[in-house]
Length: 293
Image: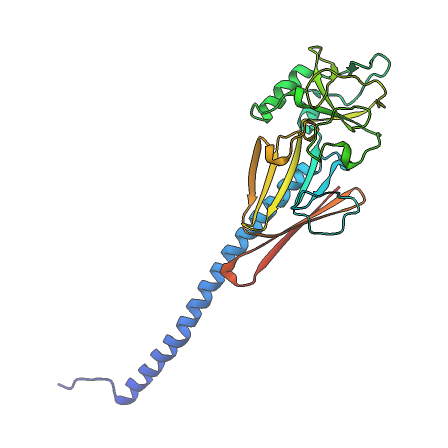
């Protein structure tokens, strides 16, 4: 019987083919793995950065527009309108209570002052339910605030950044401030002015009281710390009581490894940009932008 076997030429071809496969096969596998890692990291960055931008925008759209400031790391406060330096890492604003304004079946505050029957010590707001509003604020703040921590902003009043309490000093004079600390006097449609520093009853005597108002119980701050790359949202604090974002009752890290957080105002429009990077892919970075009207 004859036994067949590989010839020398066949062996050489096999060796050559194995060599080619070993060289290019490993490269193909490496490239496929690299593409998988890139796709996975890119999708994660896309999703996380989009979520961070949308979270900021969802709160910023209900801002009291003149209240928005750019705060620098040394504490310097700048009105965002006209701010072009670009070195600020903190965006702050006072938010209108949109949840209470929407209410459940009816608004919990109407945004209207009846000037005919209001007095210097009591404002009458038809259609407002301060009891329901107090319960809502307590729930939303997890017990950190209530209606007696709130303030009114009269639409149409002249304002500048110094009259919101951004300097860390509680507002005491209703004639010079634009945010007016109030409390409930137990009547569902009435507000009583108070001294923001002491909480004692005050007066609207000499104050320009307008028919339309917005109610606020919290300011918000988005803070970028370049040292660790965290982008953090602070909420439930009252500048009109002298609070800064460091005194906020709530905070949440929106995103890690943030390379850049930029913002600017164009008229009453605010534009924000969040850029992130990862060391897994060299110098690769990704930016998300949002314009808030």
